[in-house]
Image (cartoon, rainbow, N blue to C red; front, side, top):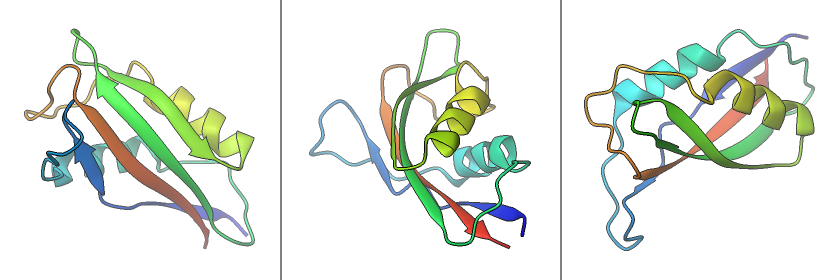
Length: 106
């Protein structure tokens, strides 16, 4: 059974001050979903990983960490997102974005 990647909306977007949450941008969520859409996963249950990322001076995504129990999804997400440019007007160099990525059976 081929798996479908479900990118949940950026749930927590934080500036450097963790007490001040910033509203998530759906345009960024959609672009990241597109980057992760074609995947090789076959799963019976869902796999979840929490991805922390930021943007560098060149406007590229820099994956800071991925918390998940499946090494394959961790490697896949990092290889697809790291140093990829996205067209996101609201990106701020150094701001840390946290988003959950879920792979579900289809």
